[in-house]
Image (cartoon, rainbow, N blue to C red; front, side, top):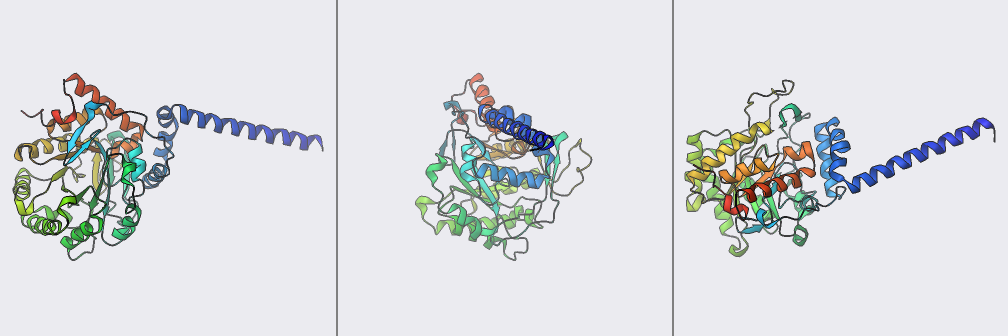
Length: 392
């Protein structure tokens, strides 16, 4: 072997050794301090990727257990009663993250007590043209106009029909239902979803508040809502009463007070009732955004700019219903204080979405730890004791 070849062999061996050592270090760091590793390496890397690709990769990583299971043990102070369920903590993942039911058990392993999938439409549809997701990091916000991209009832059902509920460890599986873009009968779209997922859903969500499907929000109008909920309730009443999943309605944050009052009047009636509300969906408003590059993009805005708006709406609805209808609060939750604000306003549980996009799995434990400290500081024994206590 010539001297040149020998030197090349040594250089190649050194490269392999360096690469192996680097990968070993990364693996040890990943396992020993996942939170630190995520903040130092994975978080900056994810922000360099196209937002939709980063979303898909994140869902896949959670699905296949790439991220470690949460080691945090929920303290008793985080217990909450929501609908007919007792939960170990009030933190859920909002619909829109796991649209197709790919990562249900993986999300539960991260510490979420509520995993809501969808929105799911009856027939598969691609959604709106790309690009359709935009990060506004200066605002801790995201604008999306996905447009109910869905694998359809049959495709999603195949993934969740044999889900071992024991793997959810008393966590809930919510099925968020949407309508197809070109549907001529929206009511039938929602009814078919209820019939399809009746045996697997812990609760249903009627999503009539996404801004990205033409005409969808008009279903929040009093007359349209009455027709829709009357038909949905009639369908639910024909199914087995003992196992009837609770019915929730997801509302837009852009409703006027009069529109909110009309909705409350409808959902308080026996024939058009709901068992709970999700407040709120994304907003079409653009409140003083710092990022001017994407601020004018069409779509729903989520994240920090929505925080106060959704909390105020929770407070309003809680007062109007006198606390009789359980609420999931969603919109701009990045910390324990954000979650606590929504609980004090009247929410029994809270969902996150944008915070997970920016901060990854460690955000779940962070929010729960901070929330537990706030509840203990104020003398509450559990979350349920604090619901609505911030109203004046």
